[in-house]
Image (cartoon, rainbow, N blue to C red; front, side, top):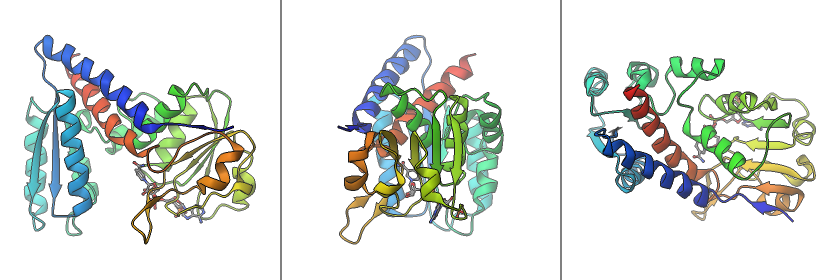
Length: 282
Ligand code: NDP
């Protein structure tokens, strides 16, 4: 019988731990601050930053929001980032992606101080993850490691297959698994015999962006399956990258969608912000 990895519960545990850490920092006279920048009116982005603000409030993190109009120039966004970089009350800076097309995302990310880059997208932080000397890791892959470890699953020596090689999920995920001494294979759209490769895995992480992509024949009996996919279906419901009903009976552990990886992202953002504040004290 498979076990569900409950992302809601594990994210609540992490937030509770962070609340205690923030309270302890406050007691020693240190406040923790997160600045969130949104350019434009994308409805999904507005929901995300609303959720981030709520999480900050619940944990005692001081959140500041910068809502900029769609036609904001690159220069004024860079000036805001520079101001936040120099603001001592700001420990973490998050520029909500995607940005409107006229803004160069790479240029904006590169302008954020690596010490405040709580999304861990800055090339310096990407490099630090590569060499295994990091304080922040991107929230989604870092959250997946928490889901696995807090479920009592050891990664040491395990064969892990990550499907997807994006800069925000697949690649950092693979590095984090490698740092846990797993043997890691990365699959992508040009991979040959993907089903065969995936079916050799003890742990499968699916970050493809295609609903029900992972089917039962691709999964080994007893595997751990982590579904990163968030696909909005025609009926408005969310669907993962894994065909849950067919795959779950073969698994030892599996994450649901929703309620698996999704809730971890904000919890890890909070954790990274607290880590940035603690690092500043050092
Ligand atoms: P991207 O579109 O950036 O990357 C998708 C990856 O899947 C690519 O590397 C691509 O390969 C690979 N791929 C696509 N089709 C195939 C195929 N037929 N066979 C094998 N590999 C394939 O997506 P993201 O990494 O940003 O996100 C992946 C999913 O995770 C999405 O559903 C997204 O919504 C979700 N997500 C969820 C988060 C959460 O908090 N739960 C956070 C971030 C993302 P190639 O490189 O060759 O094109």
